[in-house]
Image 1 (cartoon, rainbow, N blue to C red):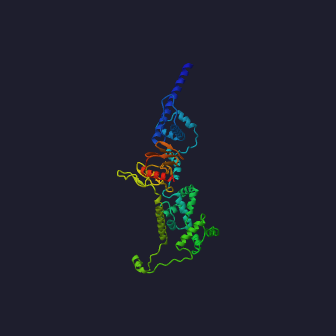
Image 2 (image 1 turned 90 degrees about the vertical axis):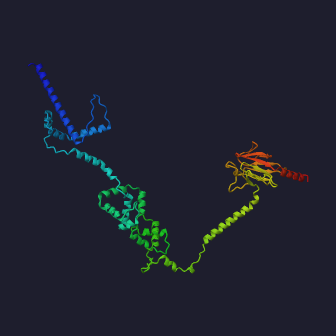
Image 3 (image 1 turned 135 degrees about the vertical axis):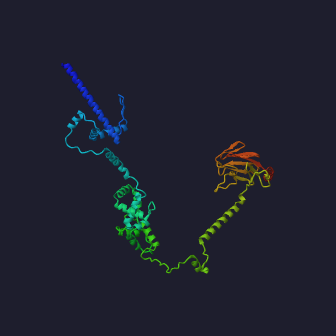
Length: 462
């Protein structure tokens, strides 16, 4: 056999060996995938038949990394499962086994418990921060402070106001859990450390008074009038007996409460009446002597009634004094209205709703307020918020002419002509007066004005 034929034979043998090796590896890999899928621990990897693979997303990267790490750690278990399936190991596998160290390998744990342990460890911090029920951190701190002060769970249940209505049994169980249950105690301590300093100070200020504190407070006499300095001195003289957050004001308030319930040393509690018979309301009513009952004078009520009566009389007197000032009468315009003029009316300022009768030689126009009283209140005609409190003055001269003077901020229009502030204008009969969109017609009593002019003409020559 020549060299060429010998080289061709060697190449075919090598190709067949590699093909058989690749087939064995593929079968072993398939068995590994089947065993892992049966166990349900490692998800099946996504694969593509395309030559150019796309980039992996974040979730795929995580899955592939988990699969690689698990196959690296548990490679021996995969080999064992492959052997148990009945397939013989190939020559490459024998070489890998021979290269491995001869020291005995400890059996690796099953994959499922390992993964469950990891999941439990990752979820453990969530259980630490979980709410433990109705007991809040503030309630735990209140309970601890109150028990340290009184050493009595019954007193704590009666005297401490928690966030919920706990029964005595619930208070006892919570205290025993804080003492003997390590998990609840640890969680409660962690929660109390996270409280705000102001919340802690507020809780400490509500701490119950101990017997030693009440004994020191009871020595203060009930007939005396102690000040804050007295209780401050008591705090300085007994710093160890009082709680660390006690103030002089808090001691004074508690002392007043003790005096109210006769708990001081110099006070004696009245004994209850002896006997089984209890005095009811009807018996007490029979014991009352009606002759001794007198109507007590209520001086405060009498003073209030006197002041109210005086105020009302003063208002009536003021109205009576202002009657002669009301020179302008206001009448509603109806279909059956009275005549505009009489023997005392000089002129009429007629609007859409009301009419103003001018019975004096000078009247003021404007908007009446509590502190400003005028003759003609234009707010009775309509909206007058743009009108000044003293808008203008209408005067009658001795010669019988009427003039209007503007004293407000806005102009007054007489027959369409503006009269600015500080100016005046002559009014004639049937003149249209417009003040801040309120229109009036000025009507003059010609007969009465003629008499006034005649009298003025008689007086002038003299």
